Image 1 (spheres, rainbow, N blue to C red):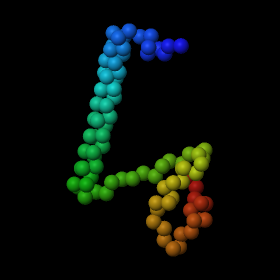
Image 2: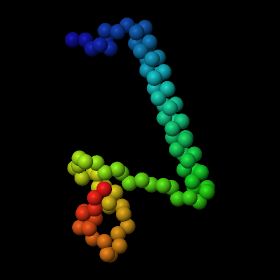
Image 3: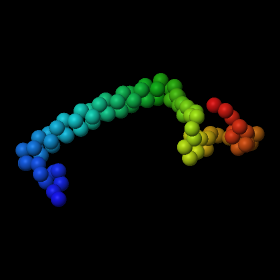
Image 4: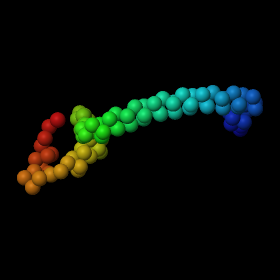
Length: 91
């Protein structure tokens, strides 16, 4: 049984290739613009001395294998704060 690609003519394959290049080019350009915009924001914040604003993930009703609480591991904990008190927090 031949695959769909093997059944296509050379001209059809080149036309498909050109379409793919156009779509990928547009998507890459959009991604590049977005990354440059984000980089510009970071550069402005670092040059003005403002710390970058970080947001904690929004709480969700459903839990997915504990991934919602990954950020707790990165919080600096003081001796007065226990893991049990963090577990009782509601968001």
